Image 1: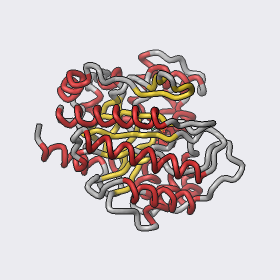
Image 2: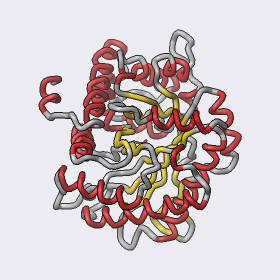
Image 3: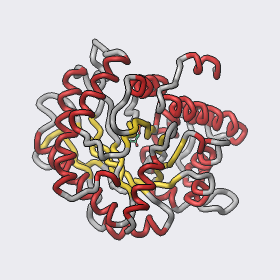
Length: 340
Ligand code: 13P
């Protein structure tokens, strides 16, 4: 596989003022999203919803790539154009989620390890043929009573590194996603410590599996207070702590870091990214790879009705634009009010 193509793809994924749309919800997860707007979880509705996102006018100005789910990668727009081709025709790179989910980790109650390594090489080769140029694998780390365990951290780091090496060998840029969940009552200090441990372990494992750092994108969670923590840290502290942890753990050879939103309110996720870039960022590009924080407003507006498509697309394009500005430290809260 061509190293030049991997470098070019990785750089394009974090091009200036652009980020990634995570639209790779599994059939079960998109079902939960549809439940919230009273829409049935049918293949046709899933296709119509994704088609609404992928045909939003000019969304490629702020979105460099879209992560798809297996079913979506094989679906077509109503005019018969395969979704990967529809995206590529707008200069948007198609990507694919390749893990098969977080499953209970033996001997580690309350913890998971992400599966999907068996047969991964052949699946990546097929995905490349179908038009994908990058992939995603999400590992989940939970903070709680006595957890995470070292067993969980190392099992997930190892799986992420095995996945990343296989992707690179098959010509796909791996998005390496170790998510420290914001669920729970933990403090930002605890999140800081666990995120630093997790990222250190992940880069150790990446080195051991011979992963080329120039050919990958890191997708971390931000260092943030637990959802149920009484003392919620402000934007400045989140930005400062996240930058501190990343500078300690992520080599400068990594071209870009694209954050997940992880359940943060959409404008808050934007403000955090913006604050990090205003603080000067780091040696890597700091961008976004949001799922919920890019889609929540569009989903609520769409409600499964074709008459709402244009308004839903406008809501999605607005969030994409706001995050594109945050990726270069030029977001301002007033821009939200103007749009409303
Ligand atoms: P969220 O931004 O909603 O966390 O989703 C990003 C993602 O791809 C999770 O794997």
